Image (cartoon, helix red, strand yellow):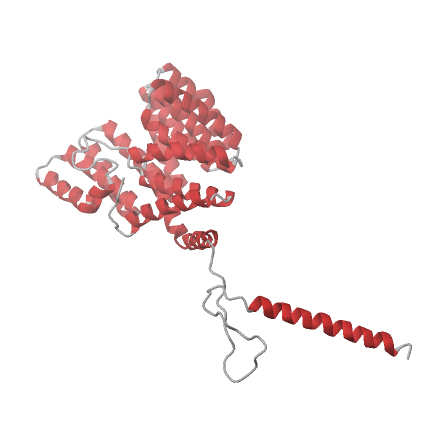
Length: 378
């Protein structure tokens, strides 16, 4: 009896706690979040299906989480577009841009095909034997093919434009278009081809003894060296050669570009404090000299380095400044990248209002670009 009594008690305790767990679970399951079921006898076990209670509705935060998860579906397409447009920004026009400016407002590009207008203009100038203007249009057409991602056509028309400019002996424009072709090879990751073109352009600049041309071509060559892994040589080239050449030429815009390029080289190495320092130097020059065209890129990359360095609050403020500048220049690719980054930063910080607003702007831009939705405000 002394042995059986504890066993009996143990069994009783077990049954009590087991039944309590079941009733607790049953009570939990019998909560109707919809409010439709008002009478329910949990003890009834007759014929018929069991009562099914709807799960609780998702909160606003959970719905936003779902939207951010869905955003990842298109992320590869968007990232590729943003990357391509960053390279497009580095392409240069020749001629006066009568047929199509570099950044066509999106509502205009939706009304008429930029490619179609350029092809018609090319046919007209070919028939009229206006070869110099024809090459300008071929260059702009190649730029358009970069913008829409038809890179084979881009290379074809850059090469045609290069040949045509050489035919009419316009070597200044020949160099500009050769630079564009080098940028395109860089975008494709064909760094050896890009390097060969950059080296040729630099050698021509050395022969011309023009400080500004030497600085520009060496700066662009240094970036290719860095992308090929020659970080130290690239940094030395810019600090010891490029910046002094721009100083001698009294070219402050060039010096700001050199600092921005140096920042890009440090960013490639994940050296964010150094990158930030040189971007701040570039911004100081740009602000002082009123070089507005460089400011969107500088502010965007400042925000990027702050984000990567783990300073999201400052990054958010600088993204906002970059966003306003990008809107003024119709830089849709940059706007898309900014809203993507802002949304993620707000979402990670638990600022669901900010995250929702950025996501709405992101979706609006994405739909304009990829679905042809008419823009409300650009």
